[in-house]
Image (tube, rainbow, N blue to C red; front, side):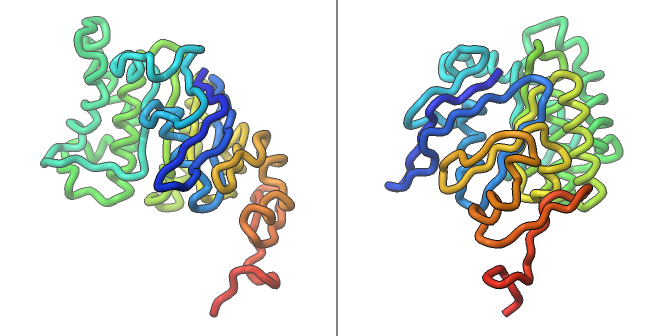
Length: 263
């Protein structure tokens, strides 16, 4: 559905991405994993059409992302970035309603705006926050409200459609992290293509159909979690030993020699 071929990106004289080729497929959760500075967010922004690659091509349904009209693109993919906010006072429900803007001018879609907003609020578990001022919400609550905005945006989208999320669990508590990951799996089962940046490798092992492991802007591995998150690969990328525990996924051995230990 969304594909990158030979993607490269440079900034400040430094290579952020080098020759990365990757395809996001309908009906799957694809996780971008890797250490800080590996290029995960840069790659997501290119595949979302928010950043133009310095090399290579990024396309949706075989057509360059740069050739898509912004409104048409917004009707096929939604993005939840790392840092979400609004510049002026708004109720949470009004923030979610922003996701319906790409559909304005389409009577059949705008007629169901209220249903789409209500469904998104419920699915993101923020219906009880609908009347709250966005500025009074916690970081985790804001993240879930903006997830609802993205879901409202994709309500009515022609399939296949895509949802791209950059570290969506970072500000969530354990319960809401688990709920969000289960939601992503459900969305993929409905046919959505889901691309998500995650730092937590156990979360990645749980939610991913495939994991793309990045190191210093290069794609090191891409495949099922048991392959892409193999302890030997993770030790190479993160510089410390890992063990794979059934039901838990890869666990860093923090007390091992040469690993991170309290100082």
